[in-house]
Length: 272
Image 1 (cartoon, helix red, strand yellow):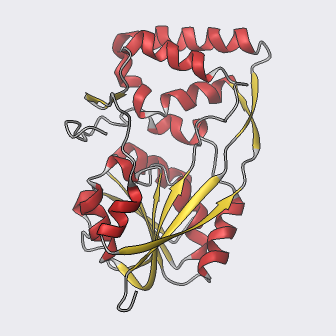
Image 2 (image 1 turned 60 degrees about the vertical axis):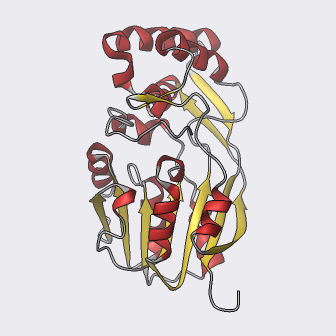
Image 3 (image 1 turned 120 degrees about the horizontal axis):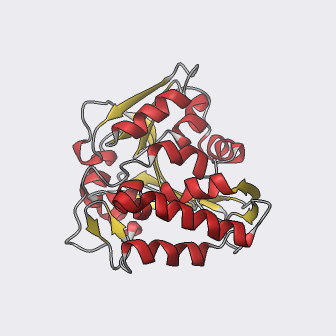
């Protein structure tokens, strides 16, 4: 991520309605792995930073007394609230991560699931470090939920179609990311006072999606949010659906998702 790029509220504007349908759900095995690794027993609190529509928040909520999902996008939180119907221990907070700690208290687990790269990472990591309980942990979740690792769905062709409409440089809100999003998380966590990471993984799985779900996955991306296409949105969707029909006239796509890797970071203590 370049230093020139700055977050703005349009980053995922219009994507919330597509997110839950277009992204593969985190599997129950991920919640079980968290519970095993951390000895979760239904007590304590969870904070999911950059929660979107609550994909991970809702999966893990049953392992905690309270789960808090934080996101800057009001539409994402409205979708999270809708999906959480009947779940009584979740609440949703509309704030930027940079506003933490925001009086939210302390947490047994803080998660970043495909979100950390959008933030002022040193600032947010330092804030989260001070929000953990004595036995608290920060978890960085690496996953790809919008597409698989093979070409059952024509991902390369879809990317080229997006570029034909939006240009060759990746879009992100009102700005662009010619170099992609930033890496180097380990150095940032360590500089903020964490040790680790300890990594655990949940294996990949095979999913089958419809053409409607593949279309939703494209519109769920920050680089292809509906508003970026302006008055050409309908034309883009028509071209996208035509592309999918050429590849699969029956309208189904079976893909293997990559593994989900979770890096656990614990606060440094005296003697560590």
